[in-house]
Length: 415
Image (cartoon, rainbow, N blue to C red):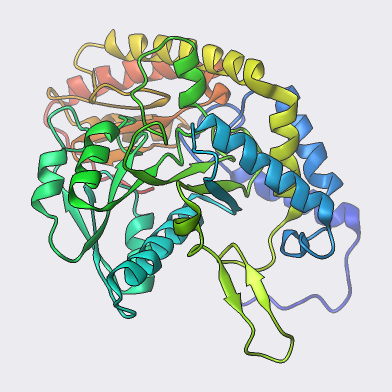
């Protein structure tokens, strides 16, 4: 039924009370029962981000150049710090966006326009080649620009297969993609091999580090085996990384970077054929919340390298315990060899989706992978306090499924 605007306004208290009542039907993300969408380091980091966001609640990041130099300064400094983190050349450039999808779409558009200039074909519409595990944002961007995405099978270890990717490359290929890590499996693709392929074939390599970009460098600093994935790899032309995931900043905040100014020059939108003169923006959206910029800057300044390393240490210690607990359940196995905090597990002995159905009935929002079938979780420190309860319910659910025998699930994998 259509809802009409109230004839008279309601009181603040009544509105807030109804909103809080509505939240009663939401999934219990604070209790660690949601496997994606929300991220947390600790209460202190969350409070700093929240306070910084509301300090710039009203300002508009679109007006950073003209009206709000404070916002422009913070945005520039976030980009500078991130470029250093990702081992970018001195003349590399970057931009803040509102999310990973926007970062990816802008990288695709930048590559397309740069390719058009290089090939001297103003209407060129090429293709993108990536592993089948690459994020759907590439297809979304391609759909908007009338491009093609070709998805290659992954290797047995669920990482991208450079040979399979190369087999799909043709004269119209403009970009290849690697993930760090892939969302379905949490595996960092062989970026060095893809970089060598990109250089050999004269192609643009984009690294989608939207999930792992602000976690992997600090995990690597701890001495863990994290493959090279950033601008330290020759052949990487661009990289996307979400601040509002494992940078632990409030939404919306992401970043996208380019190795050279020549490539970055194709990123923005610049138009002056209208009455108000030049319209210049570095994002697909126009207006965007300055709070997202301010909160990212404040979080970087608050944590620093040592703060992020501590969070990475705590998180990976929890992830180790999680993987060990899953591995102790008879019939369950981790899919691939995940590098960070995305873990998917499945079973060759029974229907893992039936396990997910039982877990859902117990209040756990299921994350699923459909190829191969598995239960998927992208974890932050929100999930640590719920570890014992989660593992206990998994063990119980597996026991039920084993007793049921040939029962099959009706649940479908949905992001």
